[in-house]
Length: 112
Image 1 (cartoon, one colour):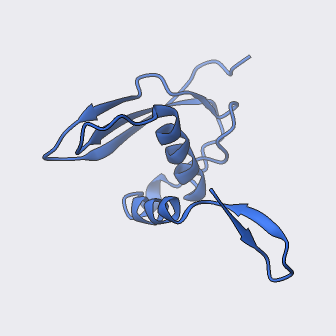
Image 2 (cartoon, rainbow, N blue to C red; image 1 turned 90 degrees about the vertical axis):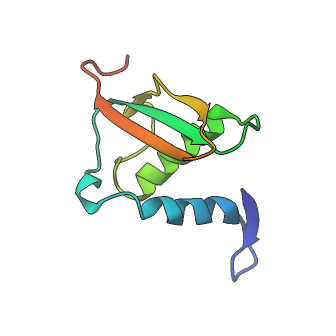
């Protein structure tokens, strides 16, 4: 996150430039046909195959994916009533083919 100022001089919080670049790049891989505005409880399993072995914070990676999916209208929102789980998410190493694989499945029962 970064703090910017409006033309009137009021400060506001905005996503980092790095995240904005990531979001724009990720959007190229989201087909129009998947922009469904999912509004029912679902599980989003994310498998991050990284090209290096550095330690990363899985929660931050998941939050970025949720924000991107919401931005590109795959999800209506990323609150806990819709994104009910991230079961099966993990980070792995793949020097030859770094990538992110995302599987969205509906949940039978809404979260309580």
